[in-house]
Each structure stands twice: as C-alpha cells, then as structure tokens.
Amino acid sequence: FADRDGWIWLDGRMIPWRDAKVHVLTHALHYASSVFEGERAYGGAIFQSTAHSARLKASARILDFDIPWTVEAIDAAKAEVLRRNDLADAYVRPIAWRGAETLGVSAPSNAIHLGIAAWAWPSYFDPAQRMRGVRLDLADYRRPDPRTAPSLAKASGLYMICTLSRHRAERRGFADALMLDWQGRVAECTAANVFFVKDGALHTPVADCFLSGITRASVIDLARARGLAVIERRIWPQELGGFSECFLTGTAAEVTPVGAIGDIAYTPGAVTKALVDAYADAVRPRRRAA
Ligand code: PMP
Image (cartoon, rainbow, N blue to C red):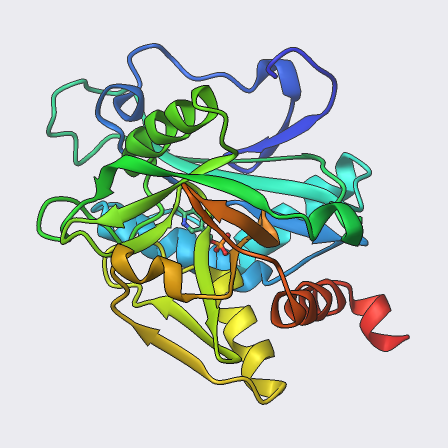
C-alpha cells in the first residue's frame, strides 16, 4: 500500500505518497503510542468530520499526549487531502503518534506527529447483496477491562487483539468475530459495533469498555427519529438466540446485516433494512436534499 501515487498530509505538508515514511526507532512502533481515526467521505464531504477530529484529539489525551493541531485545523487538513487526491467517495485515515527522538518507554518530550491519508473506497450499497448478512465467529480474546487498558481510546495498541481475532475468524471461514468484554458480555466486532432486534426494539451493549462508535451514535439517533426504541444494556451471549435480527455499525461497515453468529442464524429484516437505508440517506447530503 506504500508504493502508489498520491499525496499524504504529514505534519502540515503534503508529501508524495511513497515518501510518507517514519523511522524504525519510532516510539509508536515499539510501544503503540499512537491513535487513529477511520472516516468516510461521501460525494466529497466527510460524514461527521468534526466528531472524528474531536475523538482523535480525545484518544491522544487518553494516551497522554496532545496533537499539536486544533480540531478545525484537522478538519481542514482532511478536506485538503481529499481535494489534493481528487477524491469524492473515500476512506480517510488520520493517525497521530510519538516520534523517534528517544526510545525509552518514557518519552514525554518526543515530537507528536500527525499524518492523514485518503483513498478511494466506494460505499458498498448493493442492497440485495448486503441484506444476505455476514457470518460472525465468536472471538477468543475479550475487550479489556478499562483498568487494564485505555479501552475508550481509538488506540492502535487495542487493535492487536482485533487483528488476531479477525485472522482467526477468517481462517475458520467467517467474515469477522464478535468479541465479548472482560466480564463475558457481548461487546463489539473487531472494527464495528453491534446491534440486535427483539420485538421491534434495538438492543445494543453499553459502550463502557469498547469504542463508542460515531456510526453507533448516528444509528441510535436515526432509529429514535423513526420511533424505534433503543435499549443500551448488558447483553450476555446466552441471549443471542433470542434476537430476531442483528447488524453491525461502523464507518467502514456502515450498517451491515449479520446472517449468523456461530450456529445462531438471523434473517435480516424490516428494522435492519430501514436503518441500512436511513444511514445511506444520512451520509449523502445530496441524496438527503433530493
Ligand atoms: N469498534 C471498533 C473496534 C472500531 O475499530 C470501529 C471503527 N472505527 C468501531 C467500533 C465503529 O466506530 P465508528 O462508527 O466511529 O467508525
């Protein structure tokens, strides 16, 4: 992915894609002192850009560093990356990290860097295909106790167990893995939040030890605006057979119906379909205006 044309914003400058490199002794590479975002632009505009920039800054604070750019400056830089790369429908990846000035565990004075890349990633909206639903495995790893790791940050270090869980799921023939939390309750997938439907109401785990997704919040708003009840609560794996529908939410996943979790099958239905469509309308200002 490093060897291609394009421009990456790095510490305030546009750099040719191939030259946007870091040193081997970068603190973040050794000790995971980095935070990032994943965002999508639709028709040239990033959905919830400011919320993502604010979460990036907040994640950095949780990891004990300050990104030396304001939310407004980060929003402007992301827009510039889209323009410079001539992108309309794209994925946007900002990442902030501790640099290479010293390599001890303690490195409070190392420079903080910010990079922003974007690439074409059209939204996947073939409704028929999408409504078949993805199959989820159950992950072995659990989301850590907030006393064990900074669970609420979008911190690179937390993705170690996501990559491992996702690889295992894929080896076993599944699309992704559902992770439990440290207490054994349903938490989220490796890069998306999870919702269930029961008697027409949405049920979703309380986001107190995993990433509280920006898509999750948007979908909760869209559901409530349509008169659907949304219940945030503790959900135990023993309950999984009692739900009629299940779907995932995330910037990349958007609203993705789930067809099965392990042996338990779901049939994506009217509630899931309504929210797939509602989210598709919400992310595209021009469609919303039409
Ligand atoms: N959980 C994890 C672990 C994620 O990586 C993501 C994707 N950023 C989400 C949830 C969904 O978050 P969002 O809706 O903000 O993209």
